[in-house]
Length: 201
Image (cartoon, rainbow, N blue to C red; front, side, top):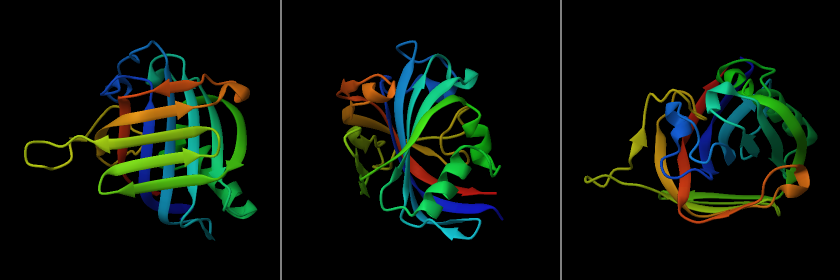
């Protein structure tokens, strides 16, 4: 087995709640500027243990999510070894196949790979993310009348294929990325997604 990864995601974008990309519709603003952070609670890639590492994607979607041509910038948390970083990049660029290979095909241009300190916290539904000087975000999920988290299942697009997404709202989303060729963002009360994942190939 090339990889087996379990963990959680924190995702934010500049769409309204709920981001139409997940159901295959065009972004609210015509384009979408997103950050997706994958935190690995347990996992290995070709024998390299990547438990505790976080992989972050800063992306610009020029139109409908399913048409691809994303411009993406990858950030690995700075606690990763060189071997861990190489393994994570191999998975998220699709080199090792599996469910993340389809996801990787949506990126048309990789703007770069970087390292940065990552603070990733998900506790009782409240998610906070800080990625170096690039990203700051805070989010909480919606809950239904029973008190259970509102989830999105069987959507045409997913950044966590095979798992339900927790429909959330980001009280704060700041992305400082103009220096790497992506738009700066500073928004309140826009779309967020949280959830768990298990990827294997």
